[in-house]
Image (tube, rainbow, N blue to C red; front, top):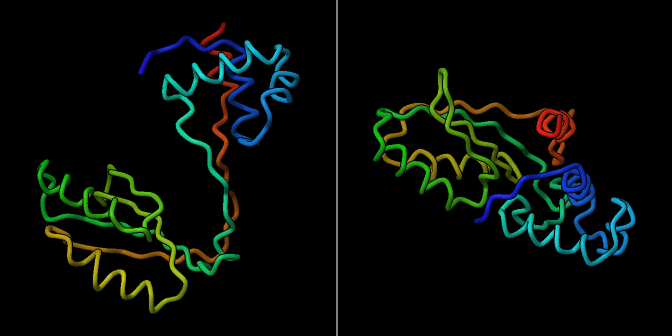
Length: 164
């Protein structure tokens, strides 16, 4: 993917796309102060550079029957490359896992998992997560309430630093 140097207009485009991926090119161009053709060229350049990875719809998990959200911390017996790769490959296959992070500190991985109910989560643990070779310890924390959930990356500080 080609690297591009971002300017203020690119950051504005990213702001609008993060908040409304379905915005028309015409409306986006108006919002960032460009005509449609140069705006579309910039969006395509951001896509080709891998800065804009994909366009998605955000779905309310509770509304579609997935009200249980669990933060799962996992420790492995070994932190050798093969053990890490095997774990990462397996959890990437599980649709219940929305996010997985390799961590520093007390645990090797932190996962965010969703489930329709506690029985489903128990099955996920018993039939999937605990069956991965090398898993030594699993600690689950059930969320009570989502206080903050953002999908927009805050680009203002980065933009000001890079353009200054």
